[in-house]
Structures are given as structure tokens and as C-alpha cells.
Length: 53
Image (spheres, one colour):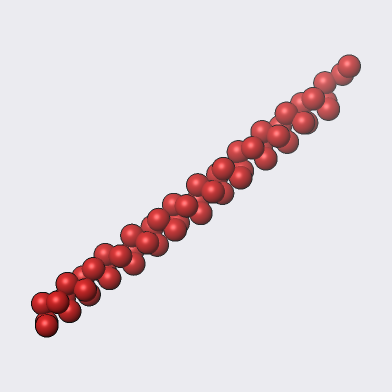
């Protein structure tokens, strides 16, 4: 019983940081995937608007 409890407890201690790390990874990368097209869209839009016809 104690061994099983230790196994579950160590599993939880591993699971929480891994889950948190995956969550951070996903939020950071989804932020980048949002940021890159918006940044390039604004950059190209600004360049197109600033170029004289």
C-alpha cells in the first residue's frame, strides 16, 4: 500500500511540472504563431503604403 502510494505520489510530482511545462510551451508557441503573421502583415502593409506609386 505504501509502495503504491509512493508510486502515485512520485507520478503526480512528475506529472504536474510536465503538464505545466507543456502548457507554457503551447501558450508560448501559440503566441508566436499569432505574433508572426500579424507582425509580417503589419510590416508588409506599412511598406506597401509607404512606397510611392
